[in-house]
Image (cartoon, rainbow, N blue to C red; front, side, top):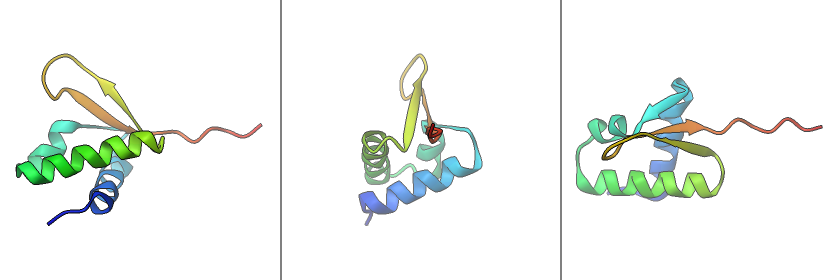
Length: 74
């Protein structure tokens, strides 16, 4: 029902409105296990592509997804 590409677009859309989005916001959007798994995998792929970063807090599922700022060319 989901693809990694769809979820990457979903994550990028969500973080375009806010500087940081807590992971719990993605879970609350649709608390379906498959949705959460695909969203998490999409975040991991976006991390690998260096399009997002994560800020880790304390506790379970306590991290925020941030859009990576483009590097200024010299």
